[in-house]
Image 1 (cartoon, rainbow, N blue to C red):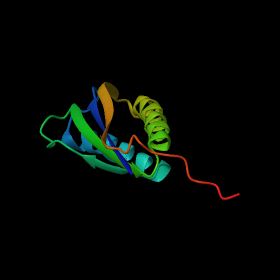
Image 2: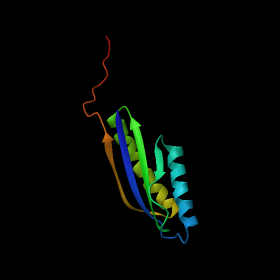
Image 3: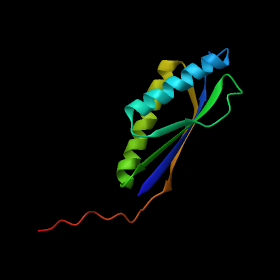
Amino acid sequence: MAIARMIVELRIPHARSLKDRRQVVRALKDRLRHGFNISVAELDEAVLWQSATIGIVAISGSCNYLRGEMEIVEQAINRMTAELGAEIEDCWWEFVESDETEEPPEIDS
């Protein structure tokens, strides 16, 4: 089993209030949840109007599948943030747990 987490730090330059910030964060979280089989959460307190940190977690039985999924999610985040008027300040992901000794399934002949 493999578990990966991604942290995305956003800058929302047009936000003039917590409501503006909340609209961008909520839209991003909803789009990600709808488009992918992942868990998404806001990780920071809504203290600063123009920044936010989003956490994403995904679990799979295959490290290779999960690696590809996280790369696709990262590309989608780049696209979505541009549409929402936000900017990515930093984005990284890592395996929290993985079975790197994953072997292919046996095939009966």
